[in-house]
Image (cartoon, rainbow, N blue to C red; front, side, top):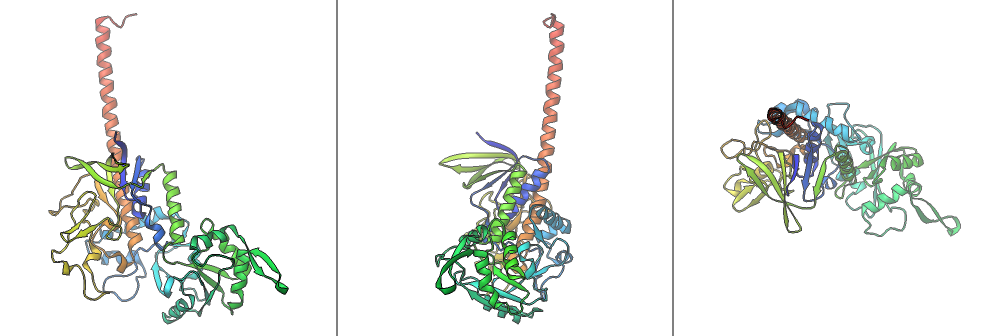
Length: 462
């Protein structure tokens, strides 16, 4: 038997979760169908709206002011500045992030010593902004090899930041395996586990890991007024972990976003999952969408395969948010480029040599592959007409922009997710109310007619 909802969102990443929340806010019954866990845990946890413009020197200061300078096929041009702001407003209602007080991008140091323009960032990152003139000490751990603190400090200095940065690498306190995952270190800080060390006169003693960490860092402060660690300061309660280390050191503490597995991304994923649960959104995870059913010019259902059974998920409205080339929401082979769930049209040059540029840092056409849409975010066929009247697309499955070069991935996911989800929710609830009204009206008419016939025949007399 098919499972029926008002709105089905295919894809459980940032765009899909945003679309689901936006649709639920319109009163729709919403289901997210996803084959895998969210890619947020692989992301930095930062929310970039627009960091760079094509052929422009330097980062964008005000991303909202720059939207009108983007090409007309860019997703931001479809949803407009109002759509971008709506996406961020929904995000602000879900996540406890900083940056919402201004339209200007903040400059956030990241792994490797680069500085990234971003619109929203976790509170754990706030004390590390590159615009802050206080001197900073970066601390790396011997077993967290993707963050080289001395190298990052040197690169920040070369980038011209307005403060002195230094870096040091220390051993994480405690008897942890050399290959212990960052989540294990974070859990130890969450619980403030006791660790062993050699005390005075060679006598062993134990102390809380946060204090032990602070004691290893303190001799290297040398006047620094803030200390940055790789983003391992707790999984469940980074604020408490950070506050505890700050109390021991007497200076502000911040996290530097690092690569996967990303604890800031995992924390953000948890916040969105809690929001979906609070909104009553159903989530069907772990099984791929293998087919869909159509009804004339509409999608009738998507088909999920589970334990060999094909289970239809029917709805009035659908949102496609399966990601781009990296997430396999857009697929390619020697025959061309395609969108594999609904077989939506994806424009691409016939000559594969036109897909890329000889310069590794050049303008690569493949980076902009994705579905084209109308202003309602409905995917368009090769002739420019909507593929389906009740299907909308959001996030990296959209074409017309280079999320890596622009630093715009999260912003596009939020803006298009909220617009697609809101429209799907509006239409689904309007259709549901119309259907209910027709059904109620029909039942009333039938009931009235039956009553008249019964009375006329005398069968209704006592």
